[in-house]
Image (cartoon, rainbow, N blue to C red; front, side, top):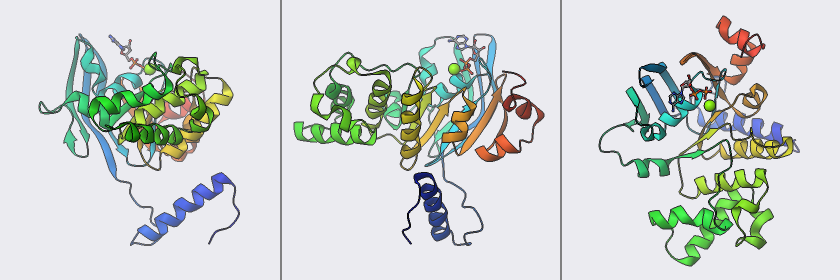
Length: 284
Ligand SMILES: Nc1ncnc2c1ncn2[C@@H]1O[C@H](COP(=O)(O)OP(=O)(O)O)[C@@H](O)[C@H]1O
Ligand SMILES: [Mg+2]
C-alpha cells in the first residue's frame, strides 16, 4: 500500500499500520509501548535542599519523552539521574530506584562507565573533543573495544555519522577538527559520538537551545528519525519543540512531576490546572 505521502503523513501512517499489524487486539486499541527506563519513588537532595520529590516516570522504547517545566524545576537534575551523572557532585544524596530494562542502575554491581555506553548524553552546548571529526567518533569505541581494526572503526565512523545526518557534509574532511564545524554540525557530531557506542537510550539536555533556527530544525528532524531505534529523553524549555518531537511529555514543577501523558493530551487537554497555566504561558 505505497502511496505518495508527505514525510509527516507517511510516518504517521506507517506507525498506524505497524500498530495495526502488531496488535493482536486489533488496530483500534493502541499498543502499550515497552518501558525502557523507569524512575520509582526517586528523591534527590543537594546537601539539605531537596530538588526531586517522589518522581515516578516510565520512559518508553522507541519514543521521545520530553521533560518540560520552568527553570529550576529539576529537569536537568532528573535527566542526570538517568545515567548517574549526579554521582560526580559530592553533596548529592539519592533515594529510590532508576531502572534500565528492569535492572537498578544504582545497584553496587553496576559499572558506571559501562552504564553510560547504554545511556548516552548530549548537552546543551555542543562539546566535541578537540580532535578530528574521525577521532570524535572513534575514540570511545576504541576505548571500549567495540571497534578494533581500522576497517571496523572506519565503518563505525561512517555509519554513526550517517545516522546523525552528518556524513554528506563531512565525508571529505574527516581529519579536520570537530571544533571547526558549525554549531548545528557540532551538535550532530556529538549525537554521532553518542550513537557510536551503540546505546539504548540517549539523553538530551536542551540540545538545540544554543543553535540557530535552521540548525534547530535539522536537529529536531534528526531526533524524530532516531526515535525509531532509540529511547530518547529530552529536556526542553521550548514547548513547540516538545510538541514537535515528543510522543510523551512530563511536566515538572518545583521538583515534582505534575502531569505525564502523551504529548497531544498534555498540550490540548491537560488534567491539572498547573499544567494548563504553564502551557498557556501564565507562568514560567
Ligand atoms: N550542582 C548543584 N548543586 C546545588 N544545587 C543545584 C545543583 N544543580 C541544580 N541545583 C538546584 O536544583 C534545582 C533544580 O535545578 P535543575 O535540575 O538545574 O533545574 P532545570 O534543569 O529544570 O532548570 C534548582 O533549585 C537548582 O538551583
Ligand atoms: Mg536544566
